[in-house]
Amino acid sequence: MAIRQGMMRLAAAGIAAIGLAAAPPAQAQSQAPANVLRVVPHADLTQLDPAWAPIAITRQYGLMVFEQLFAWDSKLDAEPQMVESWTTSPDGLVWRFVLRDGLRFHDGTPVTSTDVLASLKRWMGRDLVGTKLASYGASVEAIDARTFEIRLTKPFPAMLFALGSGVALIPVIMRARDVEADPGKPVTTAIGSGPFRFNHGARISGALTVFDRNTDYVPRKEAPDGLAGARLAKVDRLEWRVIPDASTAAAALQAGEVDIWESPSLDLLPVLERNRNIRLQKLTELSNIAMLRPNSLHPPFNNPKARQALAYIVNQRDVMAAGFGDERNWKTCNSYYVCGGPYGSLAGAENLGPDLEKAKQLLREAGYNGEKLTYIATTEIAWIGRQAEVMADAMRKAGMNIDLVIADWGTTAGRQSNKGTPAQGGWHLLNTGSNGPTMHHPLTNIGTNMACDGRNFAGWPCDEEAERLRQAFLDATDAERPAALERLHRRLAEMQPYRVLGQYDQPVAMRSNVTGLLSSAVIVYWNISKQ
Image (cartoon, rainbow, N blue to C red; front, side):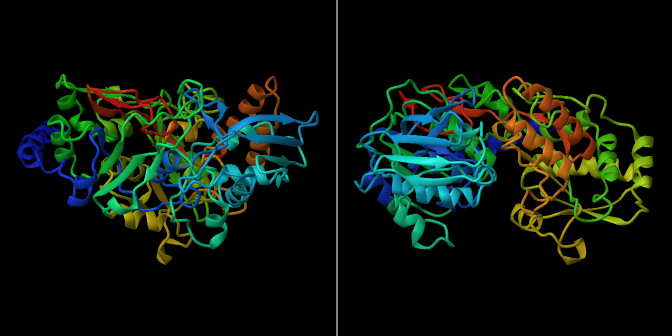
């Protein structure tokens, strides 16, 4: 039914879309070069500081306009990007780095160690990965204009992986004067050293974002690989054209008015697949994770037994089919760290699945007596709304008094950060998701951080033993890491910081004359050619 309705919407919108989606404003038309890549992004760009807010579209923008010291390749290994060379002291406590010669910001000023210090210190005070690095006593010191050191009080084996992070708040290098101008506010100047320049003049809020090729950029000599290697801008201009309606976006892609649709609606994939001028490509082999997040601050989910009950209520197959339709788009998985990934353990979670009687028993042991539970969701992100309906029904069958509150995404996302009781605007349950590169590693996984400082991801689970085991994994040698991972995963399966719902894939749709999309943690637009 969903596919048939999608096809009907597509047919109805096709004529209307032609000529609309591709028509740029007069200012952009007068300046537009011949080689323009037109993209329908998954969201509008509203935040210009990739070290301020963990927004996916801001991360994409940040990786094209700015650069990092290191970058993850297609296998999520860290490779040098702005760094030319580095050394480590025998005790692992002093890391010395030398910047590549000739690095310049878009205003022509050189990138120096002073810029690195200001950027890294800010990132270490804000980001999940950055604060973990800071907990190792990290301090940053400039040696000369191109050389700097990071000093630690204990070894941090994940140093390069952290500096190359492509998730959450990314450690891009900004001009020191921009970072230090007002530390309490996000940076808005958008002057980086990357392969694309942000075109402030062509920006139309809610409609258009423009990037121009940085003709002065000097790429690395290594072949492009994920976010690493040479960042070769092969088009003169990149335009993000916001088209909220899926049918209109699909029609524009079919008509050749746009070249790429970042997140095509899954119910329209069969329509796009039948068009020989369009092809679909997965961005990464690591699937995305969908999760049901209980709020651990309030009863009953402050008791692990109530959280465990969710694991025996949720039928992953029912929930994932409701959210993502055709089984080609999803699979079941009980691993917190992504089945198929390097840390995709199932330890302790092998037998989690539907068992209604066991769930009822666990709820009784947790002291739940039918109190109303507020479950916040949205239908603006269709799969979240569909999954919420199925899970709310299953929880009611287990005796839970569920109040499913459907709102627009902005309202739901805003309420998500409220730590108060539901009567104070808080919540008990929500479902959400995150990409595979974020969730695949204990350092970057937002949901398995169970630190008791209240700064972790919404839901705020606290378990000192899980954190001790997560720290042990991060400190482990290569030989010790598999056993450390098993111990950590068993504890997580017991504590259930969230119920893993399953994994899903979101392909990118593009015209057949577009080539060079890299397999990477974040979709970026260097290396892409348009014939």
